[in-house]
Every structure is written in structure tokens, then in C-alpha cells.
Image (cartoon, rainbow, N blue to C red; front, side, top):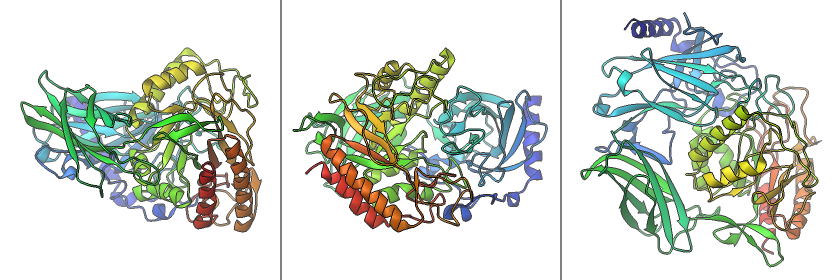
Length: 619
């Protein structure tokens, strides 16, 4: 009891010391338009899991089954050996990472530090009789959580959501104290961290520590849907659905209702199954998902106990398949729904000058996806980072194909990086590093495979920490056999491994390694630099693979590269990735500036060029 009381007492003392008005974003760097008008009371308030929206069984109001904890919290930085801070250092705006301007803190921790968060919450009375779960959508890297002084659980991994049932620890009639301890060694450990480094520069960026995506509460029944998977079988005109349910009893059942995409003819088909059982739903004359027609079917999933609905979620799915095929010229091609498709899009890092890993708002997060479509691309390579669910939902809805990278655990190539053939040598990674890689990569795949937009998994990039390549490909394929595997983007190829042979070449398009047994792609090229005054992260040290000083020069170079790319398409190249969507820190080779205030090439001109490249494969 003393431990619980001391935790609550500490909470209210610290919160009284720092008022809501104490927040002020830092202004050391450029800001996005959304960051300039940040609202501490309204930051990322949207329901964060759009592919599985829960509502109370007795209500159609999804807001009744969701409570955000985003907003002003207290924070402290201590030695990692400290069991609990004696006082808090100040206020931090969640969910922005500690180092970001929008957090209001702008500090960095190292491997010897602990970052502490503290806030309070009440439980809505409408949730009486239901269990309460707390959801963390991303915390970098290690998190330990207490509610009212009771330890409720821990998690490692900076890119995936996790949740705990806190029902035994809450007081439904009072304020409840929430305490979180975070450890983050960044590049002083084996943890996957993508492009974060302690000393940023060049292609390596500012570290990101702590909570960087939404924290929220939701009520669930004794049995509840934890996830689902929907896979299209176009040859059989059916959809295979598997629903995972926690807390089921022997006679519990799951009812799945599939409904037609919005704007099409009415259609509804229901089936009943056990939790975890794969069930086929017939879909005659399916509406196919493509970039031009991103049709999404609705899914209503209900958990039934003795005929009564005890849990209810709304989701969606798509009738679409990704595979490979051989064209009339003998080239192995990527295909969507059994038809060849040239996938063309930007390298998208997903960084922000004010929020770093965290977009200033959901509108900002979706902005980049909308601009990608407006520029005429049909694909995005999400590079060395994982986004919140709403980003993938936007890609599903807008018709953007996604290649998803695994964030690397090192920026070094300890083996031999071969970009000219099959002579690469894997990194001799320690067993603990490998085990953690598999854990985190597996969690990422499990979390994201529900999104129809994802076509390709990319476990390694440019030999950064690439190890046991064939084993990792086998692991990835076993986790999700419905997608393709681009096992070694940019080099260190293994003969007969994976589906895609991915060349990188800067600045102009070029393929060094061909293999008729593989889908050959150009996974990175371009990098046309154009520093726009007034929109730079730094005034010096800015770079691009080539640099120009006017939009006209950038456009001319881009169009020249596009013409060269058409020649590669005719020779058998099946996809290309242009570097990159936006400037990132001192990289100035984006199609937009880092603050998103300037589009460097007119989008309509880009669209004309890009669509011509995509269509060139059909000629």
C-alpha cells in the first residue's frame, strides 16, 4: 500500500509543479506548417487503429471505446539504476520523442540514462464491467510500465505497438497514476534503430528516444479480437479470413461479415467460425484493389458468447494479390492481380524537422502520401522506419503500393558489401543480436501484414548488419507467404534467394547485376539536390548526389533520368525508387523541402513524367 500511495503522491506533486501553459516547442530548427500551430490539447486525437476500430457492443459510437492519453506529461532523466525518480524535471508533449522540438524538451539520453514519464488518467464510467487495456503504439526502445505503483509489464522494440491489461490495478472512481521508464542506447547497442545515430551527419540523423506514437486506453470484454488477417484468392473468387481472439471459451464463436466497397453495389456475406480458424468467404465478381481503383471491402467482426455480442470491431480488406510473372520477352516482372505492373515511387524516410519520427499531426502524416499520388507515383518504399497505422491506412485508401524496410541495427558493413555480383559476405552478428532482430522483425510483420498496400518486405539494406541472409528470407516468407521478399536492397546478393534483385545506383539509373531468374529492380537512384534558402536544417553541410540551384535545372535532370529509366524498363527492370520524398536534415535531395513548405518540381509536371515511365512497360 505504501508503494502505491507514494506513486500517486509523486504524480500529483510533479503535475502541480508544471502547468499546461508551461509547454513551449523549441525553435532551434525549421518547422512544418502543422508544427507551427501545434495544439497540446488536440495532438493526434484520432482513433489510432483504423484497420480495427473497436466499439462497445451496445453502442455504435467508436469514441466510447477509446480514450487518448496524448498530451502534456511530466518527465525526468536519471541514471538507469534509479528505481524511481524523486522528482520530475519538467513537462513533455506526448507522443513527440524527447529529442524533438515539438516535445518541448530537446534533450538526448545515452545508454547509461533512463527516461521517465508520468501522467494520470480516469476510466470512463461507460466502461464498467469491461477490462481496460493500455496501448503504446511505439516506444523507442525498452519500456517498463507501472499503474498506481504496480508493475504491469515491459516491452522491447522501438517500432511496434504493445498493450497491457491494467484492470487489476486501476481505481475506476479516481485518478490513476501512470509511470513509464524508457531505456534507449541508440547506436551503442544491438537494437534496431534505423538511421538514428548519436552524432548525426550525412545520411544519419538525430536520435529518437522514448514515446513517439500514441498512448491510449480501450475497454474490451473477457473475449476480444486481438488481430485478423484477410487474404484474397482471386482464382477461387473467395477471401480467406482468420481472426485471433483472446480469452475465448469453448463455445465462443466469431461472426465475420464482409460488405462491398463504398460506392459499389450492395453486398453482404456473413460466416461464423472459431477464433484462430481460417474461413473462406465467397466473393463473386470481386472489385480488385489497384492504384487506380483502391477498392476496400468492409469487415465487421463480432465475438459471440451464448449468442450475445461481447466484442465488436470494424476493419477492412482488399481483393488483390502480389506475385511475379514472366512477360513475352522472357523478363520476370512484378504483378498485381495477375497483371504486370511497373512499381515506381520515392524513397520515403518519414522524418520531420519538428517531430523527428513523429509527424506533427495526422493531417501532416497523410500529406506526404497524398503528395506522392499527386506526383504520379504508384508506390512508396518506406525506408528503414515503420509508420503509425494511419499512414498505411492512407496508402490502402489512396492506392499506394508499399515496400516495407526493416530498420537496421547498425550503420556498418562488417562483412563484404558486393554491388557487382554474388560475392557478398554476411555480417558475423552475435547470437543475441540475431535473436533480437528476429523478434522485432517478426513483430513488425505481424503488426503490418493486415494492410493490403504492402507488397514487398525488405529485411536488409546495403549490407548494414546483413546476416544469415537465406535464413532471414525463409523466416520472412514463413511469417507472410502472401508478399514478395526483397532480401538485399542495394547489394550482397545470394544466388537463388528471395524474389527480387535490387540494384542501387546514384545519381543516374543503372543496373550492375542482372539475373533472368529474379525480378530485377532499381531500388535507389536519383538524389538530385536543391537547397532552398529559408527551408534548410543547417546553412552549411547540405548535400545531394548532384546539386542544382533552380527548379528548372532539377526538372531537366529528373526528366533526363526518367528517359534513361524507360530504357531500363524495356530491358527488363520491373520497379524503381527515386531518392527521395523530402529533404531530411542535411540531405537536400527531396522532391519537397524538409518542412514540406516547398515542392521543388511542379506536381503536375512530375505526374506527367512519372506516369509515362509507369506506362512504358506496357508498350
